Image (cartoon, rainbow, N blue to C red; front, top):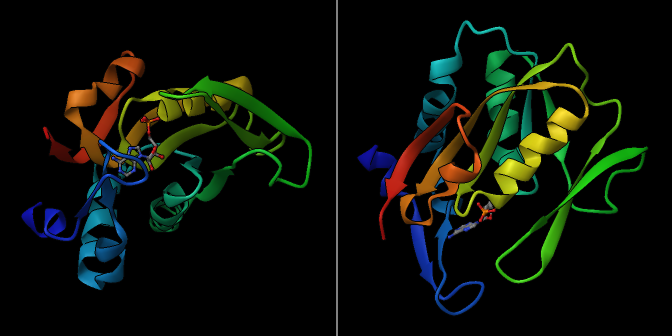
Length: 173
Ligand code: AMP
């Protein structure tokens, strides 16, 4: 995991003062670190009966689609409002300041699906818990949520209740 942490770049005060942004671009640029991250993300789920991977715009698309490829299942994008061309189901959720929404195509998932959700960072947990609720609105089951990075001090996992969570890297700063 030290090899992965060495490829995460801290950007202080981005996108606003007081936030330390965890920049994953050095990690995804390095082929061996990227391969290691993808294998570590999917490892606990090998052999499980999953039907799809769901990823949140935008960095969840990078990790989620590679995990889906390796698991041999499809990838479902959760997108910011107004991006998806067909009928959508949507969910709004609170951010520290203001609110945000995510959308998914209504026919993307159904009650026969058991999905793995992937994002780069679990921070306050608002995005991940809303994403779980959106997937469940379509009748699908969330098998687990997996993250490259978990910011422990923000206690995002509390938002996810008793859901199964797999995080590769933990930060306490
Ligand atoms: P949250 O809803 O607070 O858990 O925030 C999670 C979402 O915001 C993820 O999609 C992350 O990509 C992004 N995010 C939140 N905090 C950070 C951070 N410190 N560094 C990088 N991305 C972050």
